[in-house]
Image (tube, rainbow over all chains, first blue to last red; front, side, top):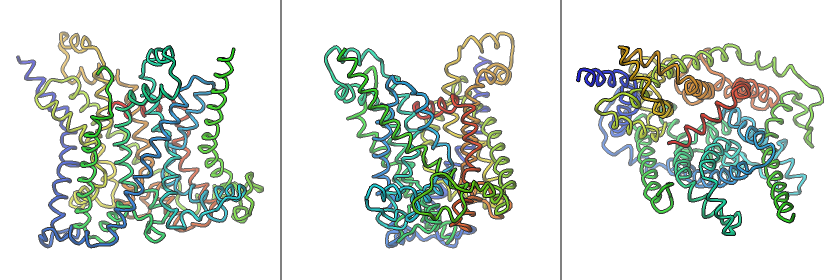
Length: 294
Length: 278
């Protein structure tokens, strides 16, 4: 009895730092941000309560809609492409072939580079006149877009760069693949199934929990994309606002224009959007996610 | 016989695909390196020269004169080390409480921890900034260091799984011997989690080393900048000096890459683990 009480006490004692962390860095910020989003606020003191004005102003703001559109277009391209590429390469890497370990290391190396360095590097590779990519396209007699200089190509360029860092997703998928018991494939071979049927009816269903998790994480990451567009556009979101992502506008409102009320309204909308999408994905998952042993 | 040939063909085509992608991953790094050794004039030649003609190593020393590289290196190292100390203090404690101690509310806090992982950084960034404004800490390193001392959900989750897998006899025996709860934690369990702690050290190092947004928001004086901010500033100031910029980018990336080659296994395991068990 004494022991049980003593251990209760230690439980709370050990969790205390993290409990404070949850309250100070997650719970309180979300609540206060909700409050601030209804005020006119310069970051130091609240001058007055303005109701839904911040939200209304955002909805009327053309830049806000441009940033929302840019962010969703980016996520709609980057998430599926990253998913397909990640699964494809992890299946290739999971085959019993020579030099498997070397390929894995090579695929992983780009993820070690800081995003700032990655951004600077790819801006050079995609340089319209002297970059490597356009040189290769020139040799192949293909058209050479000006990438970051062209509002049509600037977002696809960022999607493209993001694929250079697909290595960590590959590792996650590889681990999922290695959890699938080999018996299933052997049984399918005996039944006369080819590689594509095996992939469709064994690999994909058994990978679905891992896929769900990575889609959610990739979506949260894509909606928050900030560093790459910030670096390649030198913080401007250009050309013609084509790389002005949601978080860049939020950053600008908060730290350049000091419209903290509006920035907090944007922060809350981001939170609500991510929660809604996560719940939606989880809800659809009942139809396509299979857990082993069910 | 026929089967054998078919399998060899499959393997061959897989190798071809993997080699093509390997080139996609490696050539950019080669270009970074080769550009960093060219003269500025050489970068403006068409067609591209894959091997630099002049081997201009002075691009690297240039980096040190154009920005206070040593200073930024020290700042970044300092922030990274403090963050590592922070998570090593807070995360195992919380994970241990969630995995091995019996107390009311444990399940609840565990689910809150899972939920917190899904909160986008952007939605707490501004209000957390307000907290540090009120605490008069803007411009100092505190906002970049303090949060680590209060825990990080991914690390807590990783360590919890690790603690869960340990046998019960360990603590029972210690309890019979009259060890205090703190002793059991610090002298029995903590030493056994060394591999997981090493993973956490590596990940926190990468996070802190590569962090851009935190320093961008909180730091004001240029003497306090980190390497990432340094590279961005360098780009704003010398945006067309590609050789020096590649040299700078290469220099700030190398510490993590070198570390990776020494601790490959830990890196790979850590990613797999945090990725999959969410």
